[in-house]
Length: 303
Image (cartoon, rainbow, N blue to C red; front, side, top):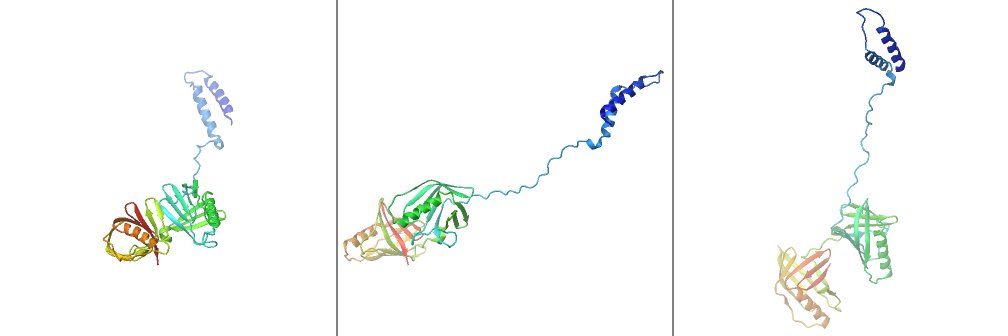
């Protein structure tokens, strides 16, 4: 029954209630009758009753948090492998390898010829390098082409994957796998290694090449003290040494008194000038650097 019909019927009933005589006739207010009629009508329309809407069921999110970007800052890597081996697809020139370092938001690359540098960030699993610049040294054509390939890879926003000490950069058909430098080329020990002089440092000037002359040192240490055996370029000798975390204190150097050709004597003068008093030292892979007051030596580990 519709509400309109109920209301009409209720109105008729109310009118009939008011008809008649006698003190016991009851008067029922029309509002009460209407309220009851409407209630009955609503009860009779059970199929049309609107229940409060339930909030939609929520299912657990299927998305997982993105992994944090790989932490590259403060690390240095060296390329490994070759075409068809591991993830490296770049054909490196024989004797060369890519050295990639990250420091304070800057990336630096060197692969045998020019050095490159630029700002970097890791975003969405990709290495984004901006403002890449490089030096302009002249090298062999194959090394120059290799530099171009490295620059192309670095500026293509390659995917970056860091798994412990293993770093992989890849973009389309270019890829390179690298290892943490300390794993790929660990620091040589100061003691027991033969270190040959390769470069003489004088202020900001680095020089090398002394005809057939050569110089080398070997440290014999026990508990931070011992001696250094010296081949100075012409003469040979030794000195007492005390080694701390980053300095070496040299005692008086005793050498033989031979005379040699001028290049050998020049090399010897540079060596003996550095191997006296307290000097700072640093070892990185197979390179030992000794720094005195405005002068120094770079030496390379040899078997």
